[in-house]
Length: 314
Image (tube, rainbow, N blue to C red; front, side, top):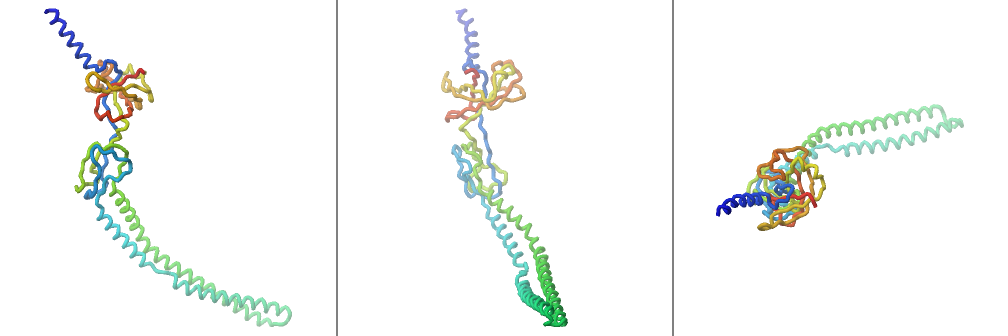
């Protein structure tokens, strides 16, 4: 009996040691995590529709929620009405200019006829069939016609310039209003909340009909198709790993059973940190460890926070 009692502590120690080491043949251990995204409202208002439910898979860019933006629509209509009112204040240069342009066309036709007559008289004068006075008279008429034409053209330019200056002052008031319309359009787009990533809804923070605020979280979503095992290795193990390296990942699959999954090292910390209290390492005496991330395809079995072990050798 004494021998039995002497052996009992030894057996107990061995049993506890085995339990502490899991399968006793791992190189690193840690917990699974996923890339989580918290989706928030970008507007304040009543949530008039909200289709996300916990556990629901939602594809990227799907409409998940709509926040009431009726007040923004009213603001936009008011600003657009102000822009229209400004447009109606602008002067139309067309009627005045059209009259002057018609006058200009008549004057140009008259000048063309006078120039033609001047050329005819010059030819007759060479043949002694016209007098110098006739040439002087026609040249004087041509000069008057040219001045009249230039004056009318100047009047057209002045008219256009005056109206343009007047309208420029009115239309300049519309620039800030147009920018305001663009801002309101952007806010209206933000009233419709699109799911940013494909994934599964982890947590829902709001319900349809509630009043939300800009920046308030609506739900949390994560892509669970690929999980990340954040594990820790010692300084002596750092030379055994590299980015892209394939590893074996083990998770509990019932009493004394393990499920094996293939994984790939996607990240290795460049600085050591103190060993987290909840994490075991190959060398339990190590105070400083390096974090690594192992990507693992999830067949639906893996869960956030689940414990996992890594074996580097294949």
